[in-house]
Image (cartoon, rainbow, N blue to C red; front, side, top):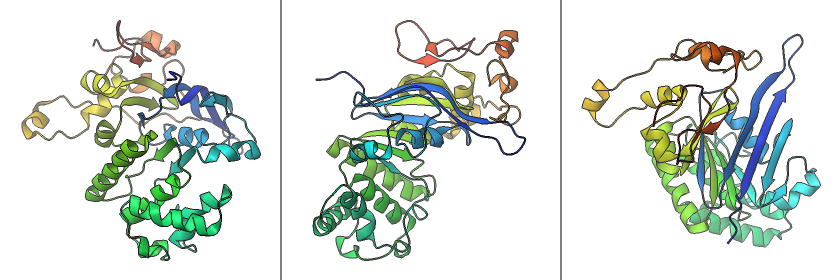
Length: 323
């Protein structure tokens, strides 16, 4: 059995050109991580930290500025569209807004079967497969000729998941797949994604800002701040003993089910808003909001390194919390 990760990202960077006199925006700033076959890695952080940009680069909807993306041992960072076509069936994406990601002029049959026909399947065979996928994700196959507006938000997201599964992928990038849904529907979609992972052996890159959802579905968690990963490790370790001050602040805002614990726990409030990625601060980009910042933080960017002896978790902080 191979021990190589299914997906390996190294020093991945995405810079968008500035408009007129504005500076270029470094949305993703040299991040590295792996995703093993059958694993779920959660990518979390505030809005604008580069999570979705990372996901879109991995499935090559965006061209990386620098760094490498290796899928199943093959560097796909700068493959042409022709070179990517055979790999598209192995890597798919579920988008945040289910309604806007579905073509309103196409039937569900066409939406789900399109990826198969692009890969060369006959139309009749693709339609049969689309009906099977509707049943797999909990939809009624007889509704296959309906249009997206005839479905609820949760049902529309099930259609998006069925479309992603059409080509039997091994890796699915889920970009905030439940954030646009009601809480009760969120639970249904999360249950569905967990079941599909067990049955199909999928690997997920789960992009989210809801740390409660991430805690439930992910094996490992990577925390992003202003385009960089500041902490990454096993879910249990990150949630139980966060090493980076930013991770601690994020987790302190997650509601607790126990009212007594909620009243007595420490709530960490960060000062100000995140800096602009067009003009990031020198040194550690978190230092203007960090309660522990010292002179070295303002002058030198910390490297991502092992948080404590004997564990695989990594943290980018000059003064990490003790485990």
